[in-house]
Image (cartoon, rainbow, N blue to C red; front, side, top):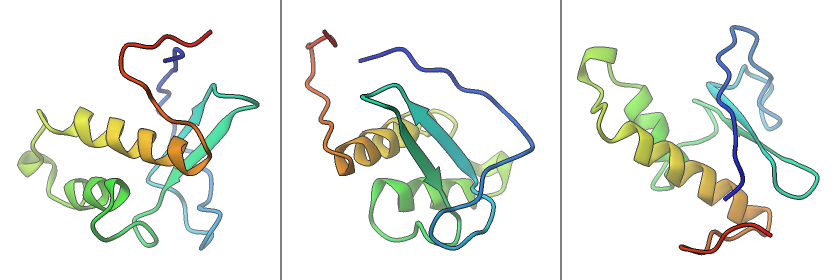
Length: 94
């Protein structure tokens, strides 16, 4: 998998679906780049994004910190898959 960076900013981009500020955004270095947006309004339900929204909706002291990285990775993989990219365990990017 390609390297990626996490950058914290107070200036979040807008959700392309509803226009509200995104809770989390990510730019994946795949192809020409994939932009992902996690929206507290739009991303609900039993999906990786919905599970991440649910955990972020908890008070900070009640969030299972040990699960947060797994939820973020699942959201990123799901978002990349929606754009046609699939992670294959053990395979490195060419």
